[in-house]
Image (cartoon, rainbow, N blue to C red; front, top):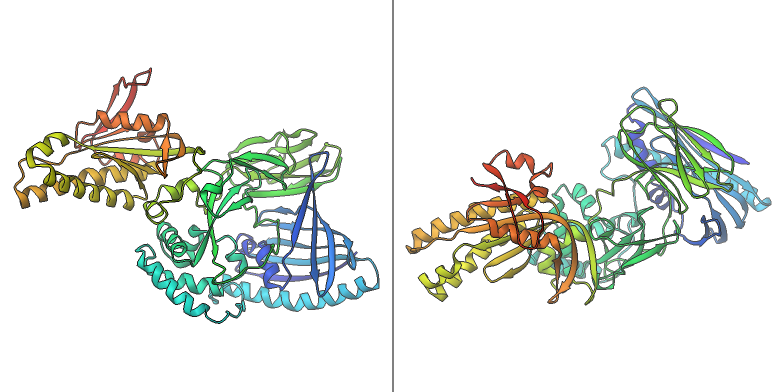
Length: 599
């Protein structure tokens, strides 16, 4: 086995700082000039998956079996390809990062086994060429990490075809005209034509927010405006519950299936709007056409929720140095089978034993070490993953509870008769107290105008709190929020803003009546459905919110205990006066406790 390696010492860059750059193999392979490729994933009788890759390098056709990556977060990764076509039998890189005081020592190596004289010659030439390129790219990455370079790598953007610049100018104007681009359309356009492909294949607005130095909501609305202006395309991704990869991607909600099969994990899984349906974006082909395939289809950066992954031969025992921060984790394998959830409070971590039908937890060993044992009888990859979902993912539930989405894409609904589960949604209902008397006292035309002004106040409060108006029912409003704290903020703003509107109208028009709003909120699971050509919610959570609104006396806010007890809501309740009550509600067998905000 031939080998060449490069070593760097960085006194000021810790492993945690260097790892996200060097372990992003998709980005690193693209900047090294390697071609994109595709994998065929074939399920095996024992539940594992055989991954066959094909590609071309320097005019040489290659075919290989791609073994699962192995890595330990912030420490090491290794990847191996077993070739059936080409000049090598085996080829792969390794990365080792060792702490050194406040800095790090980095060793990057290439390993290969030639199959013939061409392999020997290709390996030497490849090592020389890769050495020069890797050295240069490493200097660029370090300059970026130290803050002396604005971008990570010196990337040469593709030459734009004739007419694209002019087309972009029109798209920028159209995006800003929606009112949702926030003056950022020009920066988005520049990024679409200049960024690396890895940054554009699945453009995530929340990550873009950090790049642009703006709020997440502004970045989300910017991307929605970009779609409306034909600058971006929508991608609705149905993510695998295991690897979190997008195994099904469709351009519209009405094409989204109820479930899918993940060939990488060899499992079937369903959809949940709040967990595994993600909205991503990509440049419109009118602007830039991206390459087919990817530069690295697996690896630490592709599955950032996986902290440790190890490939073990049958019967192998291995002890791995690991530093896991406290948190909830899952022990599992890459093939279908039983997983084990653990709550790690610090100190030693349970080991992992692979058996035929999944994994078993072993007693914790020494602190900073984890034992892996493969008793399954065949080669398998075992892993430790964080149970939380990707924070930068924009779920379908979150985006469909934004007013900008509902205004710009009112026709974006599920298929008639289709429905999607939503793990948690907060529903807010409002109504005007004494609206019938209002129409009698001031007349239909004047009352209609008053109600319309009150709707405008409600719409602003809901949008400013990251929610969306689902529908209006007479003088009532139903709104939805992904975050219960946002819903409570909206409710408080609605109460105060309607009271301010009432004072202004009374002073301006000398009305003999007043506008008083009733508000009720509840949080829980729901079903998203297509109702009257719009995305609506159905179920007991909606019914409870409506019933609680009926308990409001006007000027107060009624919260279910599920909302009031939410950790992010409790600090908001400390700033207002409230009291606990219980009531029997129609359609619910047991008494319902709730909190009433009185002032």
